[in-house]
Image 1 (spheres, helix red, strand yellow):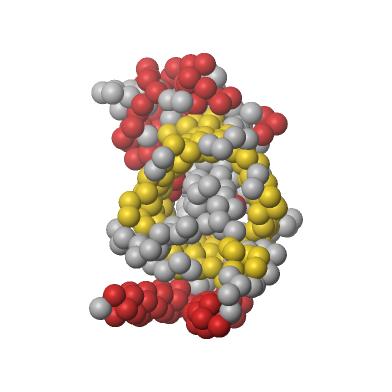
Image 2 (cartoon, rainbow over the protein chains, first blue to last red):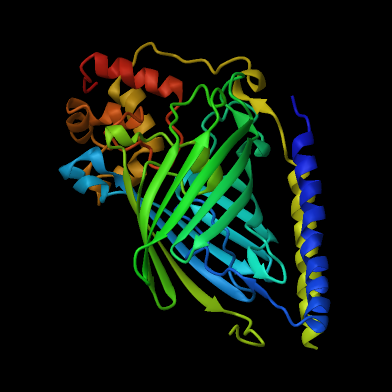
Amino acid sequence: MKHKNPLLIFLILCLVILIHRPTAAQDDLMSLLENDEETINYEYATFKTTKVVLGQSIENPAPGVLVFLIQHHFGRINTGAYEFFGLDQATIRLGFEYGITDWLAVGIGRSSYKKTFDGYIKTKILRQSTGAVNMPLSLSYFGSIAITSLKWQETDQTNYFSSRLAFTHQLLIARKFSPSLSFQLTPTLVHKNLVPTAEDKNDIFATGFGGRVKLTNRMSLNAEYFYVFPNQIVSLDYDDSFSIGLDLETGGHVFQMFFTNSNPIFESGFITETNGKWINGDIYFGFNISRVFTIVKPKTFRE
Amino acid sequence: MEHLTTKFTRNISLVILLVILAWGLNSCYYDNVEDLYPIPPACDTLNITYSGTVAPIMTANCNACHGSTDPSAGIITDTYSGLKIIVDDGSFWGAINHESGYSPMPQGGNKLSDCDLKKIGIWIENDAPND
C-alpha cells in the first residue's frame, strides 16, 4: 500500500546530477572567456515572466531578485449576468519567487483552491545560445510539492498527512525562434499520494505546449495547453487545461490577462483537476500581476 | 568577502534542497481511497429533514461565506427562505455537484461527501420541506 516510488528516486538522482552540471559548465565558460575572444550570446526573454499563462515558463527570476506574484481567477463566465459573468467570485494564489543563482530559483505560494500551500525549485540545465557555444534550445527542470490544508471531510477514519501531498516534475524545453516567437514543450509527471479509486493512476503523465507571439514591444499573445494522456484520471470529470492570454509590460510590472478553463492555480491542480469545458462556456477570466524587488544588487549590469 | 557570501548562499541553498529532496522521498505513497478505506462510511438516509440534516451540512460547509450578514454573491444558505430560492432555480444542486454553467461549490474546496450529496438530493426530491 505504501511503496516508495522508484521512478521519483530515479528522477531526483538525475536532478542531483544535473544540478551539478551548470557549476562545472560555468567554470569551463570562465576559462573559455580567458583564453578565447569569442563570447557566448545567450538568448534572453524567451518569455516575459516566469509563467507562460498558468504553467511555468523557462524564465527564472534574476539572481538576487524577489518576485511577488498575484494570480487571480474570477468565476465561470457562463454563470450569467446575475453573477456578473463570474466576476462575483475569486480564486487567488499569492506567491514569492526568488533567484538564488542565475540557474537556481525557489518559490512558495498559497492558493485558495483547496487551501493549498506549494513550494518549488526551478533549475536551468541548458541555455539557448549562439557564439562560442551553439545551443538550439533551453532546458530547465521544475519540481514542486503541493500540500492541501482543507479540513478532513471524513473525521471518523484515520486520515494521513501524506494524503494531502501531490508532486509535480516538469522538464521545460523552450526555444526562442525569433524576437517575436517563442515555443515551449513541457513533459510533466504529477504524482498524487491519494486518488479516489483503484482505477485512477497515482502517477499522471502529461505534456504541456506553450507559446508566445509578440504583438508590440510591450504586448504579447500567449497560449498554453496541457494534454493528459488517456486512462489516467478515471473517476473524476476532467478536461485538459487550455489558456489564452495577453501579456502587458509596464516598467517593473508584468500584467497578464487570460481566459482559461482551469480553476486551480498550481501545477498539480490545473494539470489534473481542471473540470471546466470551453465548449460549455466554463471559462474563467483571470490575471497575473508580478512585481519585482531587487534584494541583492548585481555587481555588474548586463550590457 | 563577496565570493564568500556567494559560496555561503550556494551551500545553504544546496542544504535546503537536499532536505526537501530527502523529505520528498519519504513522503511518496501510492494510495487510493477504495483500498485505504475499504469500508465506506455509513450513510443514514432515513428521516431526512431540513433542520436535522440539511441545516447542519450548510453550517459546516456554506454559511461561513453565505451567512445572512454580508452574504457572498447575495446568496444566503443559513436560513430556509434563502436556501429555498437557490433550490428552486436549480443553482444549488448545480453548484454543489460542480455542473457546467454553475460555480463549483464549496468554492475552492472538495465536493461535499457522497453521503451529504445523497441526503440533500433526497431532501430536494421531497420538495425541500421546511421541517
